[in-house]
Image 1: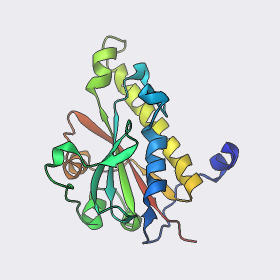
Image 2 (image 1 turned 135 degrees about the vertical axis):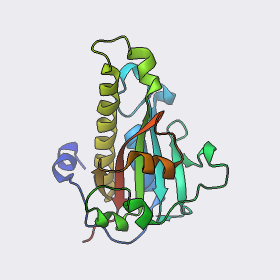
Image 3 (image 1 turned 60 degrees about the horizontal axis):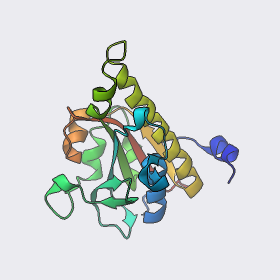
Image 4 (image 1 turned 90 degrees about the vertical axis):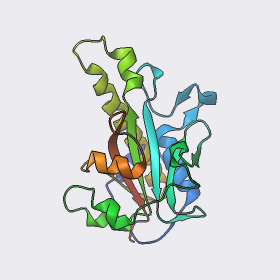
Length: 200
């Protein structure tokens, strides 16, 4: 599919079915967002100073061939792995209803998501390199720019794979961090990507 067609067709898809999606398209979406290229020297989206502060965690509900659980995406290995902090085979994933409750506003449509991806950012990777740039706090801008680039890449990959995706910015940061097993003070939750098969 031509890039121009993907850009024209891309839209936020909230009408998704309660069916499973395949693992390969999910991993393609994750690679598009943050995958390594050129032997790991760079990734699929731009990053200020090549610091790559973003991390992706997947709340997998209905992924064919993948047990339900919370996973981390490894950009260098280009695959889903069990987070090291879990201390178990797979970090326990809450029910979809519990996850949807941390979203702000009327977001019940997310109950049908086959997977929800959390994009978070390790702030220290940018702050240590750019904290002297005026004005104070400019480095935070780079975090949001990279998140936007990663999310757009993911949206185009989802469209190319026939998967519906919506980017969600309204959620309780602390609650989603607790569910994901990360420290929101060091690894800031930035956005969520809901994935599922569109209703036809």
